[in-house]
Length: 340
Image (cartoon, rainbow, N blue to C red; front, side):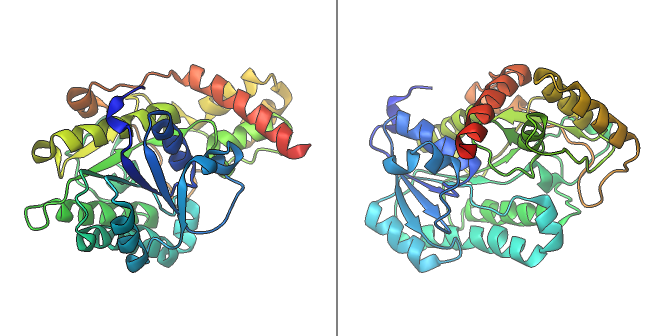
């Protein structure tokens, strides 16, 4: 992606130290944006710091629930565009610690939006990252999920994202008139995902012999995955379009997925076969047979990209095989570098 639109734009990313935030920052930097970001702590074991992108951005340390910090920062730096990616994203942690999750994901969202509103800074686009989990679970015959499906989450993480989603929609109405778009994207994978409780990085690390993979289900759950570079470009396309056409786009919701799901078992087989770890795969397939579906997680979800293609001309560029190859290569280098 190359666009003159971003040259000298002041762009703020909450969750810049996260997997998607770091990748998005990189794309924006390459396109000439002045990138600012919120970090809740000084954790330097992240993609942003590992790739030295932190040297090219201006970081403010603090909590997403600190309204005065955010309000002052927006005024001082005349922020043009905001991407709200900060969240507690682990489904398992959300089930164990719902209060923590709701504080970050719900309170964090309305605090951010109030800080923007009170700052009176004339932002041209505010992109709020909701989630496919906000929909809850529909029957397999209803896949892929569309934007007109009612939100009916059944687990704490999905509930937190649905609440944040609805709050953002309220701020986009004629009452507040804020230029907001809400995104509900599927699972995202790719270089830089250092949360090894996530399926793909965990499977790659284990297939490389760094640990033993422990299945949490019978492997029949269906998941949809988007490559992080494709997601970063879509975020940029959405914010650019919203900046240029706020009246038509503000308040709209956009899904993004691949229209095609893959079972967890298929994904594991792909990764282990690519890394030629047949013994490890045999053990995992045996464990799959003796497992049941994990409680607290949605069994199957696939998202459509029909609406984003219609509005922005976007569709996934990177096939799962291509993305997996790029991701595996990155992890091989990364894991060697931190071991040495």
